[in-house]
Image (cartoon, rainbow, N blue to C red; front, side, top):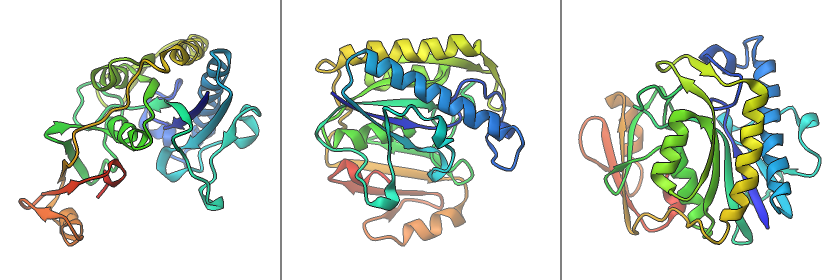
Length: 256
């Protein structure tokens, strides 16, 4: 059973404020180490649960967050510059490590959807959706479900709400947007490993996240000038100063 692990940074254990995810901050090295430890915990759990192959995507801000020497040697790291395909129909499940909640989530630690400076709300068929839903739609194109999520409590609630049949590992709780109350670091790793192992038993039971196609995708930007360039794209309709929409026939077209 092949598993793809997608990582983000905001929902990693041990990270409690925004400064810690800024690469120019001295604390980023610690955050990168926690990223690797959370990822390895998921890898270990997935293999213990029966995974035969694991690929990992360094998914935060386009990559460059991993300490590659720390990555479990049993897993492969996705390398876009080598033309690798991140996912296909041969995979059995997707796990998301370090997830955060969508923009506008109360007590969601560092909640946002894609670009926290520009994007305000994103809807799929009228349902407000975040990055977890976007990843899941991408996976659904290949008929692959999301089976496990780790992150803050708000991200885990979002995962249950969208996917239903999923294992979650909460590693902290948002105290407002910019601060978090952390679980014990070893306990957090144990939770991730246990959730990943248990998630393997969901293969064949969990279903891909499949909004009805054709789907209406709407995006509300924070300012009208952010909307100007997007509104010029082919197939995009401008609804008002800050909102655009498009109709998609493939889950791969979720982005603007």
